[in-house]
Length: 454
Ligand SMILES: Cc1cc2nc3c(=O)[nH]c(=O)nc-3n(C[C@H](O)[C@H](O)[C@H](O)COP(=O)(O)OP(=O)(O)OC[C@H]3O[C@@H](n4cnc5c(N)ncnc54)[C@H](O)[C@@H]3O)c2cc1C
Image (cartoon, rainbow, N blue to C red; front, side):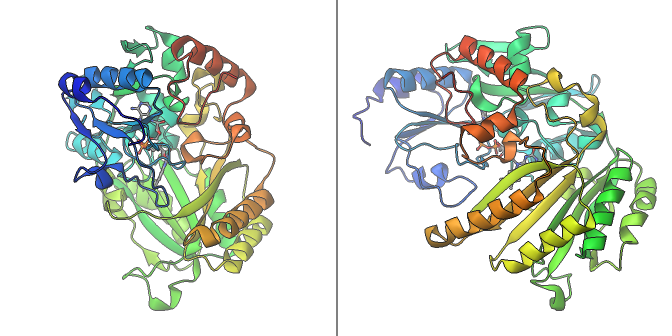
C-alpha cells in the first residue's frame, strides 16, 4: 500500500467486507474478466448496502484516492479495478424483487445478466441484456444494453423504469423519468459518470419457449452478405449475431472445419417456437449448415456456460455499419485468413426494430438509426504481439468503415477522447456535460468512458 491509510474508522462504519493486499482473497477479488490487467487496489470494499457506498466514496475523497466501480467486472477498457485506489465492489448486492402483477422488477446491481434472466424466466418474464450471461447488469445497462431482444423490446435502457443511485455528494437518489429526469436520462447510455447505481427497476415482458441457438454456416462472401440481408428482413422477434471467425474445436462440428473461417451465428426468435422455426428457414437454406443447434428453448439457454477461470487477452474495435455486401464480405474473409491469431472475429449484429423506434434524444445512447453494430477483435498472447494484433484490428475496421463514426460505449476500450466523442453526438455530449457538472463537478467518477469537464 503506497499511502498509510487509516482503515479503523472505515472498518467500523462499513457492513460489507474490506479486503487489502495480503488478504487471502485479494488476488481473486481484484481479477476482472479480461486478462492483461494486473492492477492492485489499495483496498476493495465489497459493499453490503448503499450506506457502505457512501462511506467508500467519502473515504476515497478524503484520501484523494482513485475510485473504481465494479459490478460484473467485464469492462472492455479494464476500468473495474484501480492501481492504488479504492475499488467499490458491488457483486454482493443480489436482491431481486419481481412484481408479477405489474410486470416489473427491482434488481440489485451485483446480479449478472444470467442471474436476472434465470430468475425472471421461472415466472415466464424477461428483460433483455446482452449475449453473455456473466456480464453484470450494472455496466451493460448504463451503456445501453444490446442483446437478443433489441429488435423486439429495444435496449436494456428502453425497459428501465427507475433506478437508485448514490451520487458524489453522498446522497442516495431514487430517480425516474419524473424525479430528476436529467439524471435518469444521463444514466441511460452515459455509463458510470454520474454516480453508483445500487438497483434498477425494469419493465418486464411475457416470454415462454423461444426458438434459438447456434447455426454454423460456411463463410463465403455470398453467404455472409445474404445472411445480413435476411437478418434485416426478419421480423422484430428475431435478433441475430453473426460471428465470422475460425471454427473452434467444438465436439459437434466435424474436425475438418476446426480452425477454418466459418460463420457462427447465434439467433433468437422471441416468440412462438413454431413460427420461429419457419422464420429461420431462409437462414438454414443459405447452405448446408456445418452445425445446426437451433431448437425450441427457454431464453436463458442461449447463454454459454460461465467460466470464471476464462480471462482472454483481446484487442478490439467497435463501430456501426450500414450494410455488408459481397465485396465487403470478401475483404473480411481475406483479412481473417491473413491473421494467425488464435482467435480473431468480425461480429455483425443487425439492429433496428424497437431500438430504432425510440427518439435519438430520448436517452444518452443516441445511435438509434445505426443499422449494424460491428466488433472486430483479436486475441493476443502477450505484450510482444499486442500491437501487431491491434494494428490488424484497426486496419480491418478502417477498411470496413462506411462513414458512420459512432461507437457504443459498452464495447469501447480506453481509446482516448475522440472515441468518447464518437459515442455521443454533439447535442448529447453537451447535455451529458451539463449533468456531469451538476452531479459530479469534481469528476470523482472518472474511471470510465469519461465525460470530462475540461
Ligand atoms: C464477453 C463480453 C460480452 C459482452 N456482450 C455484450 C452484449 O451482448 N451487449 C452489450 O450491450 N454489451 C456487451 N458487452 C459489453 C458490456 O456491456 C460492458 O463491458 C459492460 O460495461 C460490462 O458490465 P459489467 O458490470 O460486467 O462490468 P464492470 O467492469 O463491472 O463495469 C464496467 C464499468 O461500468 C461502470 N459501472 C458498472 N456498474 C456500475 C454501477 N453500479 N454504478 C456506476 N457505474 C457502474 C463503471 O464505470 C465500470 O468501470 C460484453 C462484454 C464482454 C466482456
